[in-house]
Image (cartoon, rainbow, N blue to C red):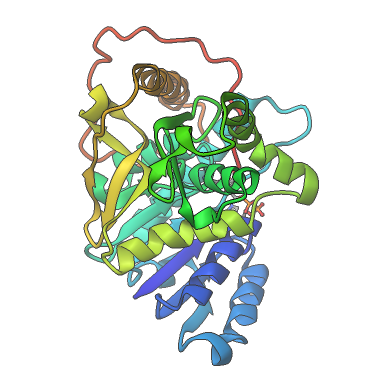
Length: 346
Ligand SMILES: NC(=O)c1ccc[n+]([C@@H]2O[C@H](COP(=O)([O-])OP(=O)(O)OC[C@H]3O[C@@H](n4cnc5c(N)ncnc54)[C@H](O)[C@@H]3O)[C@@H](O)[C@H]2O)c1
């Protein structure tokens, strides 16, 4: 099974490719990047370890060569914020880059049954645009969503509680960004309720959530950006698809009505397998969690509206790809909460 990483020359893409290499599930890994020399270097570097790790073919090359036989295409290509640049300007520049890339991916042609995994930010918005413009069925368009945030939350909780990280199970749903929603009501340690775990308290809950929300900014400050944890987060998503494991993961997909959500991509527990997003799962949430999830959807819809307005005005530099069947319906009278503080969570 082949995985192509578009943007694979960058920090996130190269870490994802390396994590996939160590995972030994993909038989072929392709590194695609606008910087062809770096792509070649990353591919060669990983290839040189294959004799110790796995019988994989690792190559680099252009979109038109690598995409048509890829089972999974991971897009991590993105831009970093310039000094003095507003958050909306960064969203706009990344959207233009993504739409341009999407048109090229579509032109290259998808392998039947292929799944696109969107990682670039703003991930929920770009996932939505990919559902509309990639030509793929919505089930085969997956955003990394709150997968990394959830990994961070569990790891930080484990460190505080001094328990094994793999035995902590708490979810973050909604937007990969400031409005993400911690689901404390179903959190467990070793199968027992987190709320009753010795040493756990409301103050810890608050602090760990804050640590998780600011983790991306912390990574930028300390080492220039997230790499290792996002790499293994991507690997878990890709491997569940390649192996048809049907893991239930918090990834971003087009909502179909569960939790009262539709017409927006955000993260809810989602069964991931060979068919892509094979099911979205609704579990009962605490009332405040339900409200927060709806707020997250409204926040995202407002950003999506701003992006769409600009695209419709022709101010985008991206080519106007032929949209697939429209997936939007009127917002059913939902009140839009102004959103002035979007931050890309990396
Ligand atoms: N969803 C998440 O959880 C999550 C987490 C971390 C980072 N991210 C996002 O991932 C993206 C990449 O971050 P990074 O730190 O790797 O950035 P980076 O600058 O290190 O890498 C980006 C790469 O994309 C390449 N690129 C740019 N335009 C391209 C194009 N048109 N075609 C092919 N390649 C192109 C660049 O050459 C570069 O190698 C950003 O948008 C970031 O916000 C998302």
